[in-house]
Length: 64
Picture 1 (spheres, rainbow, N blue to C red):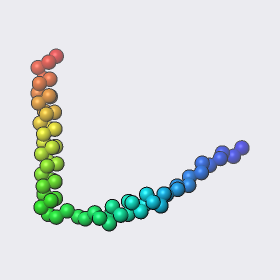
Picture 2 (cartoon, helix red, strand yellow):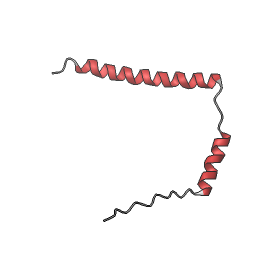
Picture 3 (cartoon, rainbow, N blue to C red):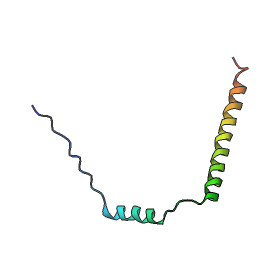
Picture 4 (spheres, rainbow, N blue to C red):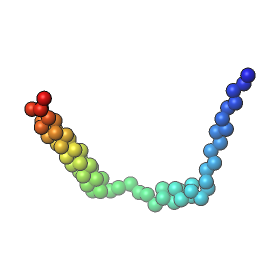
């Protein structure tokens, strides 16, 4: 008895591929200033979430 292998053919829609290619052509690397701003906002978000978690942890300590 032989087990049938599934048919794993990927049909790439050519129009969708062209749309993705168009977006990749428009994309560019950020300037140094843009990167710093994005990194600052991301770091502030991480610190804010961490602070909220810490405050919840400290608030839960006195509870049984």
